[in-house]
Length: 233
Image (cartoon, rainbow, N blue to C red):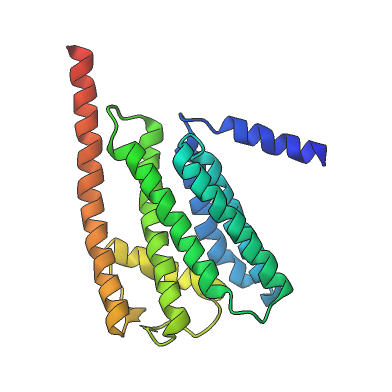
């Protein structure tokens, strides 16, 4: 037990302001990859394993942003609430807790996005960590919209053509795929919004994806030019 705690402490200490976005990005990628692999397992294992991956991802996000005290305290509160909801879901499986769990994930990833954006967009120099952070921002943007779509599906199961009416855990990989296809404006059409609310959110995500590239790239380029100018002055 002590050995396990010691390893966790060492990992947390390894996360610093020079590499925190790298750990965060890897955790987000692991979450997305795991969501596509877990459906291959037995149904009874999917829920618990995926919840474990989500909890691990939230934990890495939390400790990656511990250098921003304001957001760290807020995200810590959200993580505690997430753990409490998981316990309640296990003990009281008949309670309708899924909308609350989805809303909490939506707020958590949106808050993480805002914290990272503040550190990347308002900087005076560009580092490898910040470049990786811009990738994390893009992944978070897709995840925020994915959870928004999942919340809609909780109340309007027919909101998307090509998506079955099943638990959000089983639908996560499909809706995440749709979110990133929309964010990159690929628009394959195998999944499509068919209600006004889902259609509005879909084209808003496409707009956000286009503006993200313009804003983040221009911000990083401007910061790099400014930093070079200061060095040459």
